Amino acid sequence: MTRAEFIKLCGIVGIGMPVLASCSPTKALAGSSGVNKVIVIGAGAAGMTAAYLLTQQGIEVQVLEASTRVGGRIKEVTTFADFPIPVGAEWLHVEKDVLGEIVNDPSVSIEVPTTPYDLEKDPALMDGEPATLKDLGFSVDQKFIGTTWLGFFKQYLLPSIREKIQFEQVVNAVDYSGKAWRCGQKAEEFSKRTRSSSQFR
Image 1 (spheres, rainbow, N blue to C red):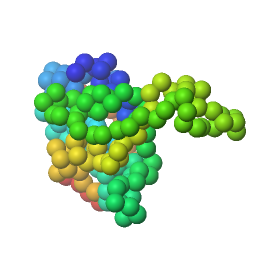
Image 2: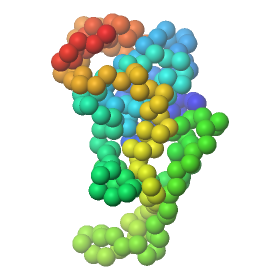
Image 3: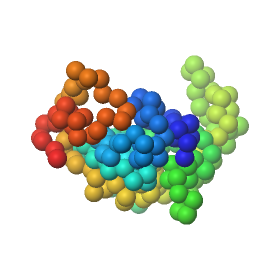
Image 4: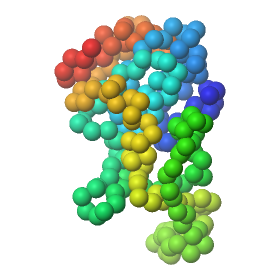
């Protein structure tokens, strides 16, 4: 995966990653830059994806999550019906092959059923007036069947990073004083200047 592909993928899943966007590709992180450990703050969509892609490149990752669960803003309700109901991110606004791009492993078969909306008929509102999804500029729009965005992350990304996540680790501040932190700084040095409500190793 190239740096450009990595940044594009981060954008697709809604990741704001200023640190990684300014770095070399993940392969370079594992090699010439000398990075051997990365601390990821948060186990939402961005954090899980970052930890997963870095782990694929052989980089040791530690994820600090403030809550007791993964997902961040993507959630699902499983007690209301006999299928999960998405709460938060719900639709897939691009082609379904983006799921394979996120998993980034051609040997993995992605089996996530989706159904498209009818862009000409399905109703929407624009400035309070009835419109179609096509009127709103969508060329692709679909929803998951029997799963959710969170279900996708739990099935395909979480298994390889679950043990790397520490829950109830509230990061109160990141100290950037002194020598500015930049890509390539050893994680041990960075972690000394990152403090959580309970200490982490």
